[in-house]
Length: 478
Image (cartoon, rainbow, N blue to C red; front, top):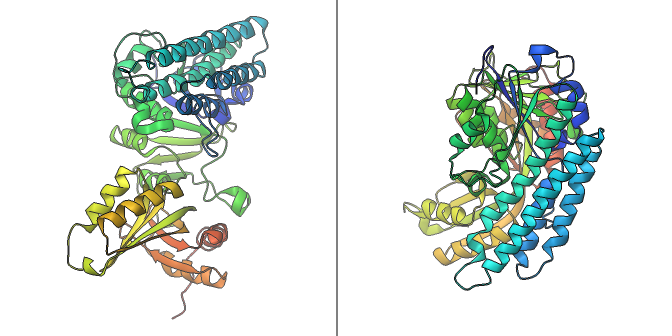
């Protein structure tokens, strides 16, 4: 890879935006750019919207895709119809984007080759595991990664065809390891993919999934594309990393508090990004943010369809002045362990954490006192029931309980002197919203309010009105 002119950017486009690829061509990818201005950019792309759900399982509803169908009925061939649905969805996607007959023919053939290859692989895997010496469970993660790569390879290939037809020297960079027998770690895979590319004269369109010995999905599951994106930025020494979304990073969900009420952040830091990720509102995967932060590469989050707008810059700079920047929240399950014998005894915390880790229960927040430890979890009821059972076995005399709740949080780079806790409690009380608990950590970057789950939306609107829409702190009555 060579870069003969200015330092480049590495930019990521999500799946929902990719489904509007023709619009992206006319705004972000080409738009008003000409000549050299088209280049010195690397684009990492996700699969077209909905394709990964069909390949794996629906991210929100859990509806089974090819992977889930194969995993749950490995002796039958019910997964074949699921794979056929993927092939049809892929063809439907690129037929809405490409217009030239030659491009459509190439895209159709690309889908046929990849789908038939995956089909043969699955048949071979079933035959192999029909022998007692082989276990399907040992191969499922590899199979999951193979399927994921199909979606990104398809979208990157179609984007390359579209750009080439529009006069851009775009190059399809396939990191999925398709029919590649090399054993490469992530950095080696990225370097091999970009080998020989002149960034000053070519526009690489890179698959969001990268096959490597590290096994991205084992640790990051469907967050792998941001890991690829961030590592590529760090490895190539990008001037800036950019994530293009369908919306601006705003002070709250505009669909909830109103488009006229929210404010674009404009500038924030990685501390705030970490708090957002903790509450399920990811600007970027926390591990990807760590990579960029350690490489001293700023992150920019933009609206893909407003290329003239600079979006929101995320770096390590402190705030110019204390202020609340964003209000968000999520439903949680409060898991409470009450044990009178806990006072002065060590080991309870570590045992609870070990159980939560074993069941992969995500901890949003935590509170404790002399005889009670409460963890607020973003986990399914099934997982929480298993955690409860394990804790009860570990502590037979303890009372272990779980109930639904929600956390609303006010976040900012610097909340000093904003009296967020007092103002928030007063505003919520005036709105008739009961606060079950509240806490303000010492770093002054967030304040959390524990609520009944049904009160979450109302609390976010109330806190946003108080902390964001009101320009300055109001005097708190004594």
